[in-house]
Length: 310
Ligand code: FUB
Image (cartoon, rainbow, N blue to C red; front, side, top):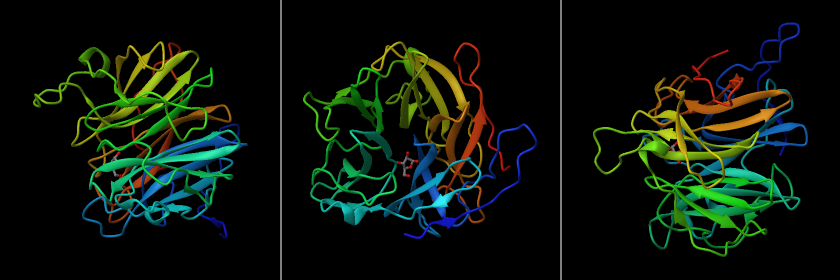
């Protein structure tokens, strides 16, 4: 696929790190950003909202990359619903991880046979694909969505996902199977904040989990309290908790009623990726991925951020 230079934005001020215009992608609608740092570049995996969409009628995933967080290359769509013989619709929020010299992309879709959401895993030798279905069937199929994958320093990989519950399973080293059974992470108000007005959902956790570890502290960032969603986070001393609610990363803003987090450290800076409806014609089903550069507070907490356009 010929790479397209997307946008060259303003030159950085002297001595300042470069900063891109938002939204990052201004040629199509994109959603559900999942950044991956590999070999000196940021690879950004997204969904694709169709023009004039009136629902999450998403058919493919896309890849973009940058070496400087300013100039982005379009790597096209190396994965779509047709890549999974068992899937029928809803190419929703996923994440890619590098392991074993390969790239594993975990994505939720509707399982044709059941009509329920399931999670598939695709594999490639390159971060930009082509990706193929790694196992020919759903890896997990419990009607829930939004996988995030995290590999701890000890080599243990975890897959988390869910809406309305928060699930996890320990992946085997092959990244495409697991030995135990998926289990629920207890959604306590101490761990995930208090939601009022919905007896069935006492905590703020909604969907879109993103798990990582930094300086020995484990972070679980997620979309909170549909609809309109904000981005909240919890921390824990280990990958399975116990989680403590820490507050807001990004309050409800913009014209998209969903939001979706992805956080990385890259080239000495920290970046928070999210989506909004900022492009012309944008809204809840015509979203755009964007990014904010930020610094952790000295105690490891995340500052609350505002959506920007530059
Ligand atoms: O993009 C479809 C769905 O909307 C995602 O799976 C959720 O996280 C929300 O962003």
